[in-house]
Image 1 (cartoon, rainbow, N blue to C red):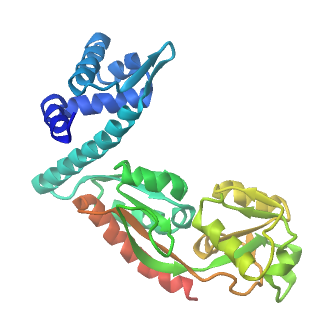
Image 2 (cartoon, helix red, strand yellow):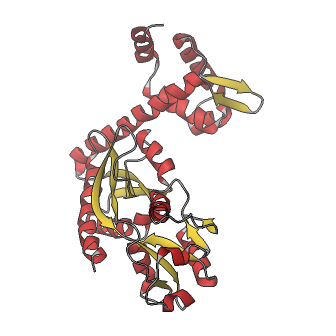
Image 3 (cartoon, helix red, strand yellow):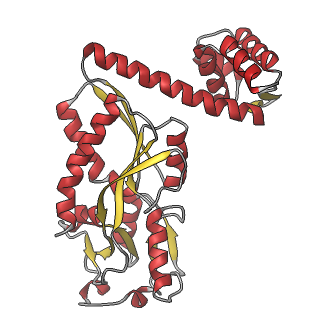
Length: 317
């Protein structure tokens, strides 16, 4: 079948409701559950899927006693269906905005760098200024969040970024550059030393984020730059609460963004080890899909810029 024939069949067969149905079936892996969610009869759902597969002359789902799973053709169609549904959502929000003032919904992906200071402060300001605008926050690492952004499941991602964007179809805006500091619990023996080098810490037990994070890559690059082997004792965690508990109850040390450290420095819970600037300050900012943004997402981005400007002053203290 030629691309033109596929396009003709899809335009005539794939209603928006059917796109939502296909995505729901793929997510649930079960036609009965998908039918319940869509408030449809199971035979009707089965018939719609069969009609679409017949029209396209493709098998979209593999059936088994355990449910259904996507074929290679199904994966391609679902990927584009999610993008189309995302655009429908954006169109709905823009129409609602024009009709009754700024409202809508924004789904934000956040990394550890932004989850404790930049994003919460922004959301507080958003609540004060636009209480009708709702937000969903999804926390994770870049290897999960950026593909979700490409698929249209997120409106933007906030946090530490690479110097150059590694994914096609995405754009990044740097808000400020933030240092990485090495920290330990208050009262840690190493906290009493007036000066030390990275090599002095190579044998310590470290808490580091997963290898997919830019923060981890920066730390390991710093060791390589100084001709040092990576720390051998590493516990991987991106959970701030877990890391704080581990730091409080052990002599482990951790590398963390400066703004995260500042939150816990004031009460004496953490101390900064006297290691010089072992990495360059890394860029923190916003990543979005190329193209236009909904008014709601654009407004959130404007507030992120405001708060980032205030935090940027703090990073230079």
